[in-house]
Amino acid sequence: MIKPASLKLIDPQREIIDQNDNFAYVVPCKDLRQWVSNFTLSFPDETMISDNYTVMPHGSVTLVYYHNDTGLHDRLFGPMTEPKVVGDIANKCQFIFIVEFQPAGFYPFSECQQSELVNGIYSFSSINPLIDTEIRQILAMEKSAEQVFSRVERLLLDNLGVTCPEVLTRAVALISQSQGRILLKAVVETLSYSDRQLNRFFNQYLGLSMKGFARVVRLNHSLRYLNDPRKTVATICDELGYYDTAHYAKDFKLICGVTPLNYRQNLSDFYNEVAKFSSYT
Image (tube, rainbow, N blue to C red; front, side):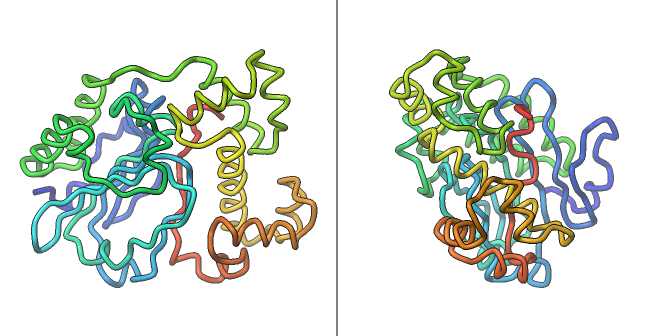
């Protein structure tokens, strides 16, 4: 089983997003970044994660392996457009290993209609039993965090299936780079594809419609801004193009289940993505 001390021995050449004695958020190798945004390895406890700990929606698939008193388990979270409370499970684990996929990044490992997975929770073995078995063996055998990261990277690269069309990659880039503010009509005109064609690609390979994805991107930039105490809600509204603070608060609560103020007052109870959209911005 992986040793917590190995978090201090991660390859110095590897890009680390954040790290302490209990966790590490790392970026995958360059060849994998189009599909995977980051890996997370953590050794949580009840003081580190509250029962209310909630993952905020980010429109992408997340694969989680966790080891507790009953053994090793997995959960595959489909593309998320709503928050998920995970703290009551996470704080009782010996370790948690997470693969966060990029938008449309999970399709090559499932080759199923991604819209069918939205907001669902599945067993990865029912979708890709080969990769699931290999990851379980890696987590059971390896004692080093770096070896886990390296072996899972190689496994995913060796099992890449059909990837998404180039036009979808370009559409995701346009939406991400605009922080979700671009008019969808402008996306259609820029790419010379019909709205219907693009939405078919979005639903098949990413899981959300163009409008739904743009909304999630805008929300995630909002979350990042709320994490900065120097930014007022009015400033955030202005930077993200909301009509006014009332409209922003209503939209935020509709997606997240809490108001921007509630979120800001309880930051430690929420997780928002740390590296998503990085291959596009």
